[in-house]
Length: 219
Image (cartoon, rainbow, N blue to C red):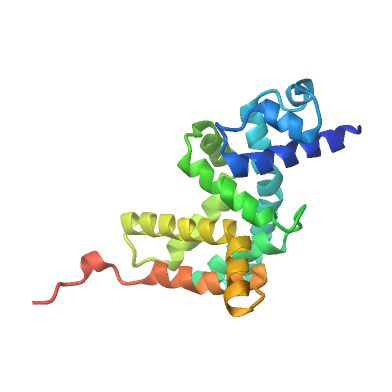
C-alpha cells in the first residue's frame, strides 16, 4: 500500500468515526480497524491521537483558509478601501467552503459536525492548534465582521457570532437530513449551494438586529 494511500485511509476513517462517535469515544483501534491498517501505521504517520485529530482538521482547513484568503482579497479589492458589507463578508466565508474541492459529497456536513464537537467536547489541544495554525485568515474575518457591525458592542458581537456559528454548524452538519425531510414533505430537491444562499441572509439579519438590551421597554 502506498504511503499517501495509507495516510488518506487513516484520515478518512478517523474523520468519519470522530464525526459519528466523538473524539473521546473513538479509539485508535476503531480507526485502524476501519482503515484496514495496523496501529503502528498510525503511530508512524501521526505519532498520537491528538496529532491525528489535528491532521483531520488540517486536511479541510488548510485548503479552505487559502481559498478564503483569496476570497477576502477579491472582496476588499472590489470595495476599493471601503469596509465590505456584512452580507458579502458572510457570503465569502460560506461560498469558499462550498466551492473548494471535497473528497466526497458529505465533506462539508462531516466537517461542520467535527467543528461543533471541537467546541462541545473538551478538546483544549485542538482549540489551541486551530488558533495557532489558522489565526490569520480567521482573524481577518473577525476584523471584517467588526468593520461591518460598528454598532455592536464587543459583548453583543461575541454572542451574535456564537449564535451564528451554532446556526451554521447545525444547518450544514445536518444538511443531508434536512434535504431529505424537505424532499419527503414537499417533493423539493435542494442543493447545498441553495442552503447556503438561504442561510447567509438569515445570519446577516441576526448580526444586524437591534440590540434588545438597548431598546426601552414599553411604559
